[in-house]
Image 1 (cartoon, helix red, strand yellow):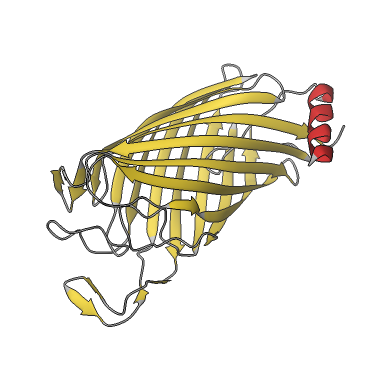
Image 2: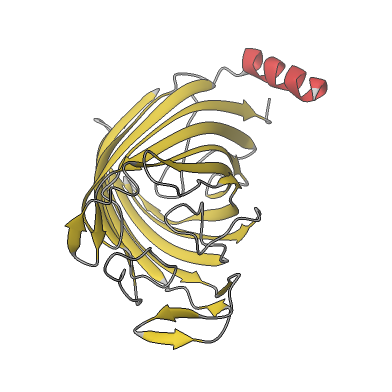
Length: 298
């Protein structure tokens, strides 16, 4: 660990380039043999949720809060091919009632991002990713669970246009997500108005689509965004019942993202608000992060 810290310190002193942090939902790429490590803290809370389409409160929960810390490294295999990893630690709590929150390591995720087409300011990008559960958490104890304990695979197509002089850009993407069955610690469960005498639960597949409008200049970035995510099947939360992994969860979210990174060290922030949904909480979420970039070419 001391050797790693020394290497990071030396890299910070010798890195004269402009750093670029990137995510699985943008058209920003690390250069070849460049690594950016992001450490992020996230906070999300809600006190109202949609039970099917009925928006309501639950005084046995009060305000539900989810917090997380995550490490996300991104590495440039080439200027047009990047790999991104993430591993979060998550904990949940409520302000009322007797439900105990969960905490622990959630799922390890990996993304591969490829710039397929580049023509002037336009680019077309293919992004594939997946996740596997790492922590031994309980997926059926919603809304206190920290995850669904399923394996996932996602394919995403992202189009982007950036005006060279002003840095103004517009991106849009669409994704399809496959999710595996999960095993729960009970011999039967109720879903789709039926009783299933098994411990195997089918979790619905998903899709999402988003549009982002922003400005990316040397050392800083700001954008506004809107995203729609939904399951492709599933049932609804029954009246006065708890959520379950089979639920058809849908949400429309709007927000803002910003980043300041003039050299190899930077910070970023994100705010999101769910404006409409089904079988989800109407949450307000915040994220702040610290970015550090290393250039292995130097």
